[in-house]
Image (cartoon, rainbow, N blue to C red; front, side, top):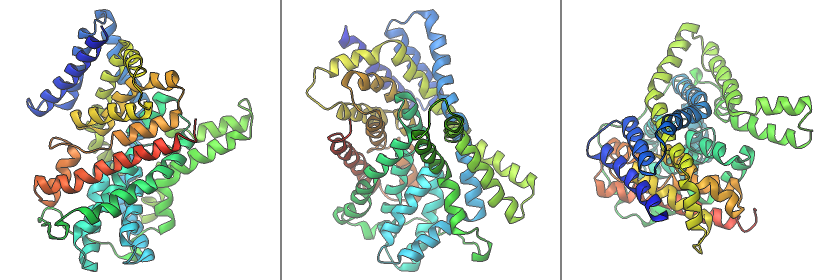
Length: 443
């Protein structure tokens, strides 16, 4: 019986890949059809299926909708105001040419954790190409650390969709996720962004097509200050961590505790950041309300498809939960002499490779992995990080990140695997190794 439970999940995911890759069906329809297939194959009662679909979509949207929308708005206002340019210019000028790769690691992480990955990519890459030309350095030497930082920042830190969904599913302490993710990400991106370059042959000879051109720069006097440019994207993290610290010293029934919980929630902290961004990147630069509103509308339109795909990913997650497959998998895994963190990582990696969607992989894996936390008595924070690392792994030709990287630079598939593929694999494996190391001390 257990074999058939797993078999139908595998067939359902294979159907998802077939519909997306071969049939070219839209991800939303493919995810819904695959979820329905698994539900029927697992023997769910027909009157249970529609409520499960509604619960899956609603659960994801209730957790992520406002966060995703607010994140898109902040990214748009930062880009249009020149705040992104200010962050990049200041960090690069401060650290200098010798430490340029490390500077770009930092820039990548900041942009990755504060914006959608595609937005962060399209903002940072033209800036990096400009820097490479000015410094007379082969562009790929600087692209790799930037993308290594951006992919890990996006995969590891709330309020990005993948990690936020994992935090919600595993009931993890969000401030602890930030703290230990930082511990994990530092050695990981040094491995993928700095050390890896030494082992990639032909890196300096890779061509650069005319699609991705150097960024046009605004005059320095028109840019917002570095402090405010950095404060806005990091404000949600600051408020969440500060809230958790305050709550340690007060009773859960106290007024201060309740205020801290309110301000430290993902939705309210993001709202505060949006309001601040509207003022410093909008009104303070002389933009009228209608101009700012139009920019916000444009940002929301740009991520509507992404938001719906993520929501559709919640269908498969909920089917896996409601049909009891997650508990079956835990029972099977408990018989294997392997760390539950490795098992969770493998599950997420497989879903990411098969679906080509990092956030969908994290959300789907959450439904499978959540029962392991109680069954194996492991840290939910480390489980969040293990799955986050698994959702950021080597990808195939139908993955959006792979295609964005390959098409933007006009390099071959082979060179894309050597660069994007390897840096993602190193990110994922090095991150898992750090989780296993931390698990010796954190229970």
